[in-house]
Structure formats: C-alpha cells, structure tokens
Amino acid sequence: MTAPPPLVTVFGSLHYDIMVEAPDRPRKGETVTGHAWHPKCGGKGGNQAVSAARAGVRAAMIGAVGDDDFGRALLDNLDRNGVDQRFVRVASGAGSGMSVAIFDDSGDYGAVIVSGSNLTLGEKDITEAAELIAQTAVLLLQNEIPEAANIAAARTVKAHGGRVVLNAAPARKLTAELIALTDIVIVNAVEAEFLAGVSVVDTLEGAAKAAGMLVDSYPAAIVTAGGEGVAYCDRDGRAFALPAMPVKVVSTHGAGDEFVGAFAAGLARGEPVEAALAAANAAAASLVATPERERGGLDQSEPAQ
Image 1: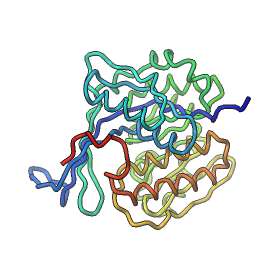
Image 2 (image 1 turned 90 degrees about the vertical axis):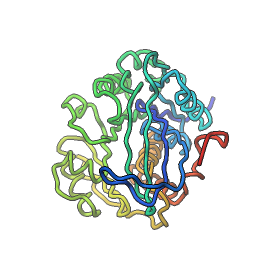
Image 3 (image 1 turned 45 degrees about the horizontal axis):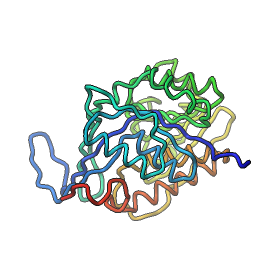
C-alpha cells in the first residue's frame, strides 16, 4: 500500500478579512475615500494551511471560529482548499477573528486584527486532535494565538517525533520554553529586528546577519527581506541566501504566509532545505504578482464592492 503524503498541521489563527482598496492609508484623524472592498478568508494559520495544501501535502488545521457567518465562511474556505478542518472548534460565546486591511495604490497595506475566538485556543484543542498530532511531520505555529497554546502543541508534536516551525509573527517576546521547542524560526525584516536586536534588516546581507544571530537561540533561522530575498542559517554551519524572484508586484498581502506554508510542505516531504526555500520563494513571488481578487478563497456569491 502506498504511504499517504506527509502531514503539515497548522495550529493557529483564522480571520475573516475585509480588504479595502484606497489611494493611500489614512493618517491619524484622516478619512480617505476608497476605491473598492471585498472579503477574504485569512489569519496566518488559515493562510499557511491553504498554502501547504496547495503545495501538495496533506494539510490540517487546528483552530477556533465563532458561531457566526464569518466562522462558517472560514470553515467552508478550508474545505474548498483541501484542508482538513475536523479539529477547528466552534467556540461558544466568542466571535470569529477578523481583520481590516487597507491597501494603497502601490500594493502595500496596513491592517488591524481582532482575535476573537482565536484567543480561546489551548491545550484542550491539542488533546482533542491527538490522532492528528501523532501523524504530523511538521507543525506550523505563529504568534496570533496564546503562547501557552503554542507551547502545548509544540511539546506534544515533538514527543511524537515531528518538527516544529515557528513563524514568530507578529513580533512579541517569546518564552525560553517555546524557543527550546522550536526547530526552525521564520521571521521577516521587522520581526528579525525585534528578535535579533539588529537595527535594520532590509538587504540580503542584513537578513543573513540577523539569521546568524538568531541561531544563538534557535537550531535554524530563516529571515525574509521582502523583495530582496531570504537568508538561512543553522547550527550545523550551513548559511546561504536566495535572491527574490523578479516579478511585478500587485499586492504583498499574504506573501509571508504563502512562503511559510510552501516551505513547510517541502520540509515535510524531506526535501533539502535549499530546495524547500527555493520552492517557497517561487510560491511567494507568484502570489504577489496575482491580483487579490484572482487568488481564490471566498466564492463569487460573497459580497464585493
């Protein structure tokens, strides 16, 4: 009998996103007239699970949504994209997580998130998903759920022989316990500056320097530098950088999550880290060159203006 594809399990956030297109993002006290808006299913956890599934591995999500229309849309989206959502809990008394992202004419954006049901996640969710955890090759974590929940998930997956990849975003101070359970940390320039204590990470050279500093705490570190590329370093002495693929950028929203999910898929398949990073680079480049409305997600019956 042929073995099933390796499993990437994502334990993290699910957000219903409202995407607003405007000439610029408003300053404090300013009202800006926008061009259009549309909904999208997101959250770092949800985005990374979809990305991993798109990269050809089994992908499963452990999370929580509210008993509301947003929650039902988030569950439907996971189904449509081939993500196992059996262990996404409907949280009573909490609304689904959501965000509002405002895109300017250059394709850059700013966002506000409301965590909602994501903050109810904890060790009980890992216990309920024991059968999934036992099969997990790679566990993906982020910083949009409580750290105690991340620690419980990482501890359990490690006990079953799986690997833990932490996308330490958004940036926040991490406990020594979570750091010790992490096999690979992935951060962007802003998060690298926070965790590594370096002043500027906006070049490949700066990303490589930050990655080298992060391996003082983590076995391996990946630092993305946007349109410049990505740097890798580990405690075995491997260190290299890959330039970004040249594309016309339409929207940077979700590029980091696409990168992380695609990398985890390659890692779960046992690919060399160089190959997994190259595939992740290509997946992120393809995403940023694709207009938001053409990326899939919600079906055409959902509202858009």
